Length: 159
Image 1 (cartoon, rainbow, N blue to C red):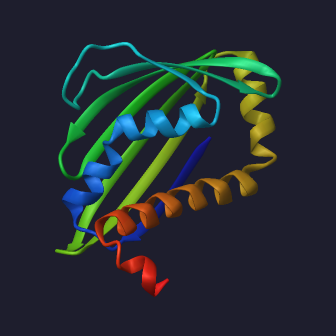
Image 2: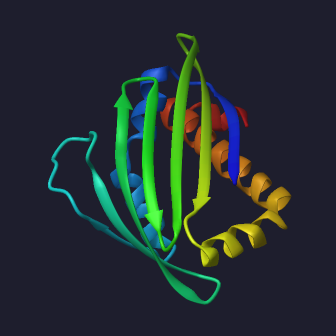
């Protein structure tokens, strides 16, 4: 099952890429939502090989997910792979510089089942695909607006 969206960001590509690779900030955000995040690597700088063990409740069960940064090409490309109980996920982020102050952000998420139980879970998610697509797009748009506001705080006054 695939999700994808694109969003234009009123910020330079370097600023947008820095926000997209601010993994410490993402860790803090998900912890506030009750997700347990444990860093598995000892890397001091952001880069390929960063890994996390993530645990979260979903549909009444605790789910475990291992994620790893698989590819980074600053400032235009990021790939994260993840594996859970029977599901493989690939998150891809591409940035395109539209101008010095504008960036196009394209994000894709591909979920692939590896066993029957995971196939049933993915199949049940397909029934809510429209709603999930909308939530995915809203989350990406929210991220884009956050990047814009951090880059240009005066923008908040015009909204």
